[in-house]
Image (cartoon, rainbow, N blue to C red; front, top):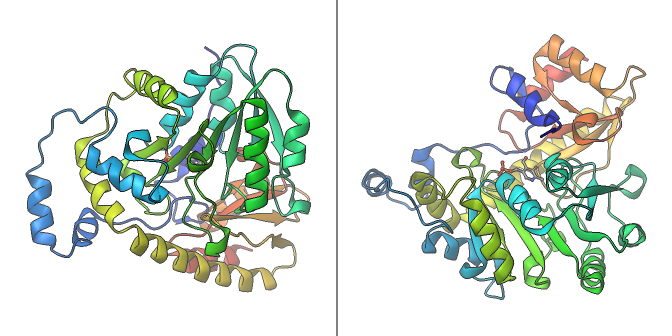
Length: 371
Ligand SMILES: Cc1ncc(COP(=O)(O)O)c(C=O)c1O
């Protein structure tokens, strides 16, 4: 099968673990196992329980306590533990969704620029992704009328992401309602990538999960982002379409079967402390954004639309050589890694700044020296 290499993940594979400063990560600062287990208040007891864990196969859907903890993020109703499938990060359910819902000849409208699997994986199922671009002039927001104009009799699904990677834009409540109505009118599935949910800088911008609003929506979540626990490889999808959930689960038998039980255990602990971890991450984002805006005030050739949510902002770089050459330059001169826009299918005028790490200001100082 022909497939396009995942530009961003290959770029990270090449540099992420050797570079001096990571100024482009989408995952915020992480925690150690000790820090996770200490969240419950008694580290020694937590470590003892963790060490006693049996290492057999876990439940294919994810353990019930873990799914209950995830369901709690969706409010008291209507998405429940029985509507959740625990997966290997959010990457796995993107694939499962494509395989479960799409056939040759289908069209899928995809919000772009995007995390590449939103486009690429849809092709593997034989479908044609139809990009619906967001633009800087609209503060990177998605216009539901532009989505509606792309619907044809072949459209099977919408793939949406808010807060948005790579721009940090959030969708309004009105736009969400209009898109739910649009999907309902045409009987479309919605893959709602909500991995940055909880990281809205203004809590009023937080949308209800799509799976609560619309039965054919599949909401994605992941511990990599708000909780900073990407190494656990725990994510999930949630849908109130029981037939679809059963198909997603049946497909998972061919990908990972079940999640690693040590990860499930740590995930359950972390989910009990969601408020603490989200609040910590949001506070770091706010202070890093302030530091970045002070930096922007000193550099006329750089600008951005202030992100409203998620862990990143999309920097405009006025350099005639393009953003990729600029990023290559700062990597060579200062060891600062920044991912250029084309890795997200965006023009070579922008690059993604990651805002969630503890060493942000040190990395920014290194960038400034290089400039
Ligand atoms: C929008 C989006 N969806 C999905 C993923 C994959 O998440 P995970 O690492 O949990 O598989 C990412 C990772 O960066 C992402 O940005």
